[in-house]
Amino acid sequence: MKTDLIVGIDAGTSVIKAVAFSLKGEQVAVSSVRNRYQTGLDGSATQPMRQTWSDCAQAVRDLGEQIPDFFRRVCALSVTGQGDGTWLMNQQGEPVGDAWLWLDGRSAPTVDILRYSHTDRLRFELTGTGLNTCQQGAQLAYMKDKHPSFLAAATTAFHCKDWLYFKLTGVRATDPSEASFTFGDFRTREYDERVIDSLGLSNYAHLLPPIIDGSQQTFPLTNEAAKQTGLRAGIPVSLAYVDMVMTALGAGVHTGDEGVACSVVGSTGVHMKSVDAKEVYLNDAGTGYVIVLPIQNRVTQVQTNMASALNLDWLLNVAADLLGEFGGSLSSHELVSKVDGWLKATMPGQLLYHPYISDAGERGPFINASARASFTGLTSRHRFPDLVRAVVEGLGMAMRDCYNEMGALPKEVRLSGGAVRSPILRQILGASVSANVRMSLRDEAGAAGAAMMSAVAIGAYANMESCINTWVSPLLAEQEAPSLSLANHYNDVFDAFCEERYRLSGTWQKIDALRKSSNASFEAIKADQVEAKSALNKSEF
Image 1: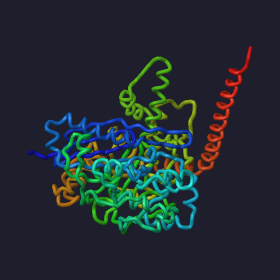
Image 2: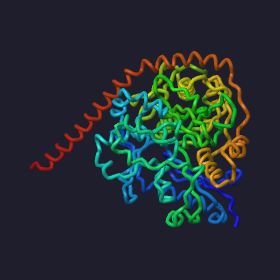
Image 3: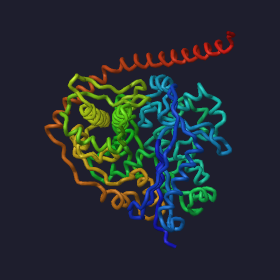
Image 4: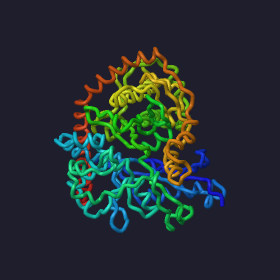
């Protein structure tokens, strides 16, 4: 029987992907299922847990339909997924309500309190991670005060990939990456009571599952999961690390070269440097993440923008909506194909754009749930292409802002994500940080990183470094040097970008208060309308 495929599952926020790889790291096939989640005016962002598992199983079954003899050929499976968030499960293995995603901003008041507590700096120095609304620690602390019934009904607090791993294997566990940056110490890769206590969660420590490393330990696929996925029962399943670091691993964050970083320009912007655990730079602001790699003593320093390519998506959607008002239409692919032309036709640094388009504000390199996107410097001569250029430059400025908070700027940035297929966008990003750039030619870096965990776990490779040499290094494109004149110009743009960001903080708070007041007024108006309609129905003519 020929067993020559590893399946990597990457359960993102909007799409769940299942990808088949050969043992040499060649991508064989990919399938995807659109994910669904709900948002509310209260800042909530939730996802049905049962549906997420159903969609995951569907993605694997769809993958199997593309590959001859799939059932027999798959020798291992690994799963990663969206980070942070809170996926509660009870003793019977059933969900306690819908999952709270990393996009959920309801814990903002709790974060404000905890970040100013006398123990927060200690928590930061242990975890290497700035507290924000995305994280399970903040969300559990908020639930403790506002929704205690959730925690009373729960026996396990999972993250997304942990929930899927449970459905695949029946094992309650989490991985070293999410465990340490949320509740532990990145040096030991274990939970730390001081961190849990600083979050006010000592009475809920029993919710935290055991920690396993998927590159060293696997559990077999259950009979029930085999039926639902179309795979063979008993094949080894790895619990991979969080999707951010799996994508970075697959895209080249660690190849043994010094001064290298990796930026994933996806819906969010994730900016990472691989460093020795003893050389981590902990900034004064107490922001960012330190996420361990599946390599001894290596961690990634991380700063993340809540929204990266989402900013460009928003602007292109505005154009699509406007065209629709006049009976026209362009597909998202057609709109994206215009971006390079718009960038070529415009001058650099004419406008400032702060790319904080997410409803949840910003988490890197600063934390402010009220932060919002804005253009500065608009005049009547500016047209749509100027806005496109400003948005792309805003992504570059935000990238530099993040790397500034991790110490020295990198000499080379490996780029991953759909947006970086644009050569002009890559040029703008490289000049923004005055660094060479190299694009990763790996299409599904997150799933590849997860599959690499399985490849090492089953002994196909002696260690992760040897796997990287085969799966990652050959797929790094040629190095692209930045334009020196553009880089010098962007140095001045960045100064203005930061000055304006500092000034905007007070404005964001005022707008946030106005928004909440407006929402309350809207609800009151709706209530008045319902009452008036009821009175009208009861009246007699």
